View 1 (cartoon, one colour):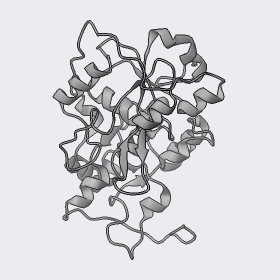
View 2 (tube, rainbow, N blue to C red; view 1 turned 90 degrees about the vertical axis):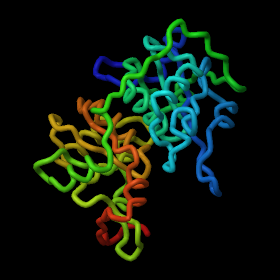
View 3 (tube, rainbow, N blue to C red; view 1 turned 45 degrees about the vertical axis):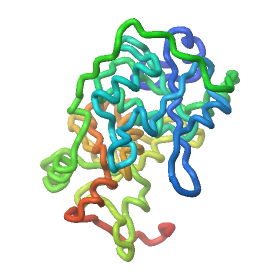
View 4 (tube, rainbow, N blue to C red; view 1 turned 180 degrees about the vertical axis):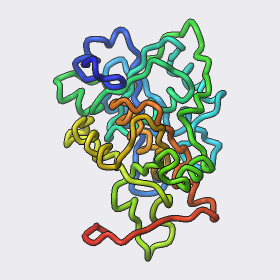
Length: 291
């Protein structure tokens, strides 16, 4: 890990520090059939970073009582979830996943949004760990050691945006904080012929997947170009959204690596926006885009 990396570690650094950190696997399994998502425990047990603990982002580190999947957990829920995986207030945490990094970024953001100050992400996830020649463990993982002190969450509201704050910023245009969609360009554009597609009017697009290289690692040069092309002022506090707050967390991580630490995630994102029938969606025709 270089000095310039604020929130990422590489596989070599993690291998050298395994005895001094708690490693959390935040993998969520995406299914071809319903339910669309399920917890990634089966994938975790098939192979994970040695010493890693499975962090159930599907229920424990989200609010299972919410109508919107993966909603940020409540104070009581995050306290219980961190205790389950043995994370205390001073625990140094490294998070990873097995599918593109957005799930790991989501857990990174959830922990930060509740005031945990010592969480970073394994750049490239399990694939990078394996590519570096490191071993994996199989099975249910090792039980966490009892933490001497319980993590007491602090609600960092400056990292979270609600639907009204997002709408107000988007309506303010150049005079407000930029509202940025982290979905791919085709999803951002939507299809005028398909109701319910498109983006929040007044928002701009920085696709989270384009901040990664072919190996799924963060690409600093690509991210810098995307920021500059979008005209994002590092002094501003952008509001980020996507379909359900996952890719938005990935973009928050990418921006934080470039010094934009004050980005806020619209937690409900388009899932909440679309559920409110009074909220408009913008669509545009993009010749050459895939359907």
